Amino acid sequence: MLRQVLSGFIRLHILYHAELEPICGVEIMEELRRHGYKVGPGTIYPMLHDLEEAGCLSRRDTIVAGKRRRNYRITKRGSRLLGAAKGKLRELFRELVEDRTPTK
Ligand SMILES: [Zn+2]
Image (tube, rainbow, N blue to C red; front, side):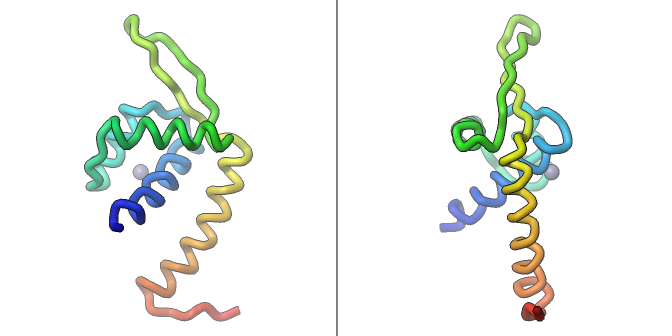
């Protein structure tokens, strides 16, 4: 269950960084490790692929030192999703972490 919850966090984290600059799997794994998530290629690559399939990321391959590197960048659709998720996250944070119920 925790896995499922964290998988959503990781996806948002990927989108966030892909909005700042093009990212590749290795970089995002390092970034997530920095945040205390232990995720391997078996988790990250399928997620990147799913986000690409869903039209949230676009991929551009480059060759670095003879190896293919898949670079991902956020798409318009991905940005919209991230924006909507941020709003939801903000509200959830207020309630869960700050114990404030939504006032609208
Ligand atoms: Zn980060």
